[in-house]
Length: 287
Ligand SMILES: [Zn+2]
Ligand SMILES: [Zn+2]
View (cartoon, rainbow, N blue to C red):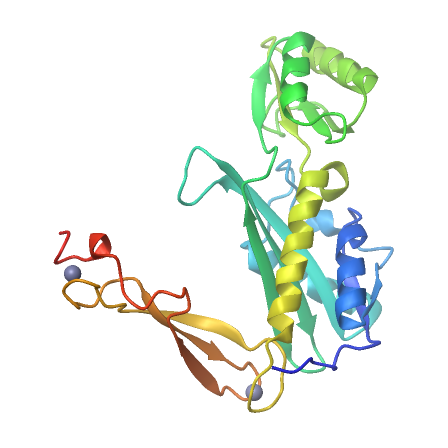
């Protein structure tokens, strides 16, 4: 597959106000020859905040799409990049916290959208109810403070919290925020959580970089028919045969790639490198 040249020297507006350009811009400028600009008056907080004052308007992908569209509307450009993170329990290993990051490229000139993503268990994502500065310090020690920011509020529910202290990066600021929040609390208990905004979270910045690299890989997959970038997997087809009894299993046998522009498609067998399924995964051999 050849290198797509349709992005070389084009301006791409990056929808961020949390300094994500620090990790996204060097990768896209080096790998694709894009010129990344950050629009100065874009308020991405209206598309949701991690501290729950502003709910997200849609799912992770829809929210990234809205940010990208907003950046294009604001600047009149035709190419936008947006990223969106989500934190929570790992889909398979529920006691592990994970960070799912997506980075989206929206090209209005070509009418295409390409997504890169990563699922990382490297995250400090955590929150706790505390009643003293000592408990805040213990939480801070586990959360990578002070290279990673913290948030203090008198109540986890932002509607009941009289103030939210965000982006705490020094001992003094932490001490003051805990003192103030405790004074405002009616229960003697307050809420502490990790600040997941990119500029206060270098671990998250690394995950955003990984999702950006995935985006570059996906852009480089060009359609064999028309050369459009982003020839991506749209479907995984089950039916990998059991190594013992040769019955079809639910494991993936092939994946289907499809072009967004000309809709030509290609089926690729054994994407995981396995040509047969472990009998432990077979409904007949291991019911
Ligand atoms: Zn095509
Ligand atoms: Zn079997």
